[in-house]
Length: 140
Image (cartoon, rainbow, N blue to C red):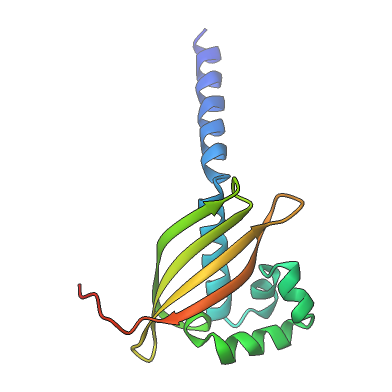
C-alpha cells in the first residue's frame, strides 16, 4: 500500500510540474529570455531559432536577421538589465504579449513589447518586437 501511495504521489507531482511548465505565459517568457541570452552571447543560430516563420520570411538569412537586431534593437540585443513586466494571453494562448523593461547599457530605459504566436504544431515563436523609449523615470 505504501509503495502504491508513493507512486501515486510521484505521478501527481509530475503531472502538476508538467501542467505548470506548459503554461503559455511561462513557456514564452522562458523563450524570450533564452533569445536575449543568445543575443548576449552572439549565438546567431539559437537567436534565429526563436523567430516565427513570418519573421524568417522577411529575413531568410540568419545573419541578416542578426545584423538587423544589432542595428535596430540594440537594447534587446545587449541589454544592461531587463525584467518582465505585464503579460497578456489572447484567444486561449494563440497570441501572447510580454512587456520587457530594459535598462540599456547606454543608461536609457526601454520597454519592449514581444508578440509571441502559437504555431500549428503547438510551439511558440516570436512574431515581433516593438521597442519604445521609456523617458520618464519611475524612481526606485
